[in-house]
Amino acid sequence: MYQSSESLGRLVSLLSRLPGVGRKTAGRLAFHILKINQEDARDLAEAILAVKEKVGNCTICCNISEHDPCAVCNDEKRDRSMICVVEEASDIVALEKAEDFNPLYHVLNGRLSPLDGIGPDDLNIKQLLARLDGSIKEVIVATNPDVEGEATAMYLNKLIGPFGVKVTRIARGLPVGGDLEYADGVTITRALQGRQEL
Image (cartoon, rainbow, N blue to C red; front, top):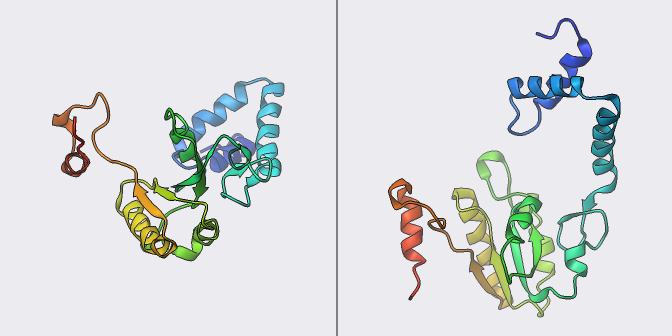
């Protein structure tokens, strides 16, 4: 397809390996990169290398960070009696948008998915259990509300129970501004189950 340039073909091939990037999108990105000036291209390449060289995982919460422990674990203003468990580090960005919510976090780095060969030993569960030293009063399970996320939540609840720690699950249901007529049955069921007194 890119017979006129082996380098361009290689770039398209590499970009198409990124999640959510198909061959057409990879081609558009490659042609855009081809058009930008040399300095911007160098900055992009250096930023990719810097991320690979400098970013690692916090040894406490498994979040991505350039420092160990990470900024969240070092933040004394955090509620140190609460850990919010997420599937991926990117989930923390979404949760941090909530007002008056400042727990510690723990990143599982995935979720249970037997069909994909992902079991408990493939996740950061042992590290989570090691943190339950008596100072933690609540673990909030914030895995995605799909089959794998629910299975992971139930599994964690079973493991954490013997520690005497309260385990809660984030509420699921209709988004603010959403229309009932467009919601699926599972979402409506969850919204009804999570109803609150006015």
